[in-house]
Amino acid sequence: MQVSFTHLMPAQPTHLLLPFTTAEWEIAAAAIATRFGWEAQLLQQEFKAQREEIASFLLADNQAVRRLFLIGLGEQFHAEGFRKAMRLLVYQQGEKLLPHLTIDCTQSATCLANIDLLAEAIPAMLLGTYQIGKYKVAPLAEKLLPQLTVVAPENLLAQVQQAFEAGKHIAEVQLSVMDWVNTPGNHMNALALAETALASGNKHGYRVRILHKAEIEREGLGGLLAVNQGSELPPTFTIMEYQPTDKQIVKTVGLVGKGITFDTGGITLKEGTNMGWMKSDMAGAAAVIGAMEAAARLQLPVRLIGIVPATDNKPDGKAMQPGDIVRAYNGMSIEIEDTDAEGRVILADGVAYLAKNFSPDIMIDMATLTGACIFALGYHAAGLFTSNDELAAALIKAGQHSGERVWRLPLWEDYESQIRSDMADVKNYGGRPAGAITAAKFIEKFTDQHPAWAHIDIAGTAFGDSPFAKGRSATAFGVRLITEFLKAL
Image (tube, rainbow, N blue to C red):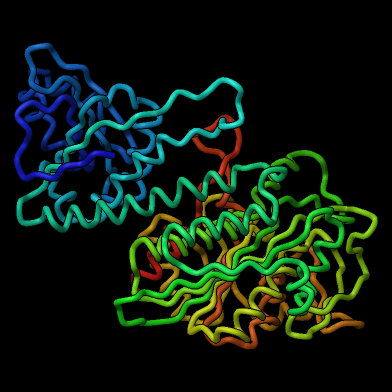
């Protein structure tokens, strides 16, 4: 992505992009119409500057600008709306942008007031080049990006460039995460997921250690081993650590991601309808690896620990069965009431291992954990569970800034009765009522009463319908959320 930054409009920009809020457009439309020889009323009919609205106009040969793109920011600027519009622009009209596009940030007072957020959102154009069909026989035509010129006030150019570069790092991480989550289970097994983390760590400078089955057995990670019983493929337990070399560390943050590379439900078999979507059940793990890479790329002043327990969940003759009792890493016994509630069982090992071996200041786990969270919040927000008000506020704020929103649900002790077991310390399923909450209460049991732990259920946000694929596809949800949270520390 070739980019230049300037305070002067290029003499002959091939294509020009101007963003406006609705209020600004009402004022600016007449001047834009005059500039390009149009009728103002007609132009206002064609473009309303609504959020994520895109309008494209081919200009006369005697104009310096060959094509004009107008991007709507809505009633007020929000980076996520602009980010989506830029991705959609490249995805739908990428060829029209070539060979050169100028983005003029100086025509909108709102853009100038939010110049960091605007500049950081521009690299979402990279996401528009993502193509899901990499397994097709016919090679996919490469989607090209234009040479880009960003026009901003001279005194803000360094600030704009820095924000743009940070956004570019995040967008490149998101591309990787989307690819990992979209990869089918026969290609993305537990070992492949661990090796993905290893490759990222080697490239971007953070440590990665992979525990294989014999080491997992020696460590006593009984929850992960139990879920893996029905698989022909061994599990992995990946431990990642990023530490900045030349900055004072403000906090140690631990992340745990659910790495179920394919989920049949085990003995408690799922219905066949849409089971293929269960390749996405490792989206929490992918987001954790992505957050590790983002922190390393941005050299954030935090020590970051990432834990990924990984396996598939299959209904083999040796598979874990309802009624079984297994022992987790921290010694607690778990009664398996439902083998399709397996994600929380491997997360139990993950959070317990993190708490015991690293004692982080903050612990966060992310998982495509429950259909109940989708019923509660739909596909527009992830469920947030924590007893720490300060941590909840920080994650909610990070969600608002990043566009990856979270909504807090209660963790009251009243719900604990649903996961009490007569035969074990806890059971892994509390029934349908408040299913997302009881799942979080289960994980909480293994945090060693950590005072700053949060669980984020991304079941409805990690994999969904979008304009960028005919079926459901990965969103890379969690990467921007966690990165924004870490930056704010």
